[in-house]
Amino acid sequence: MSEHVVTLNWTLQTESFDYEAYNRTHSIDFEGHNRLCASAAPDFHGDPSCVNPEQSFVAALASCHMLTFLAIASKKKYVVTSYTDNAVGVLGKNAEGKIAITRINLTPAVTFASGKAPDQDTFHLLHDRAHKGCFIANSVASCVKVAVEGTFTVDV
Image (tube, rainbow, N blue to C red; front, side, top):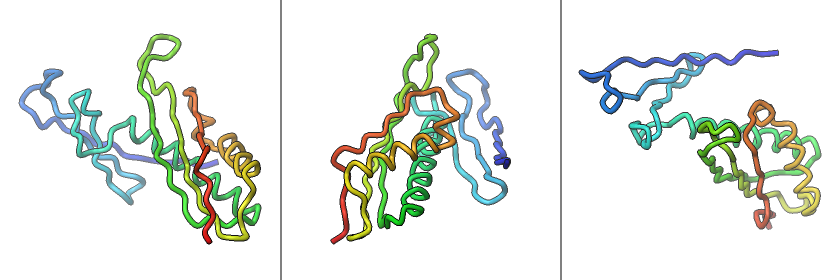
């Protein structure tokens, strides 16, 4: 169907390659367009000013869910005027005892234009369809929970 290319570059910038000392900062280029400063999470000796893989993973899933939700809402003729999500990925041990993102909580807050909004039940169904249609969510083994309670607003 399609390919999505990223180029990752890392170079040793410390005198030692000892686990406690070597640099984790690297760059990720997205098909020659945007460059992202990336590193390990601070808990793993990374640079907190850069994006870490755990954050990237959560961001990819939250972005995919939002884009799928917007596509579904648009096709249903609902008008979304804003969408905010404070997504949280939980790092823990999976059933096999391996460290993994074991849960991702999406908490989307969606605002619809007056007269172009679904009812509460339909709103939940839209998110359910978005979750089932999100190809990033369909690609991971982590439990993904979409919490939409109390986040339904309509522009007046």
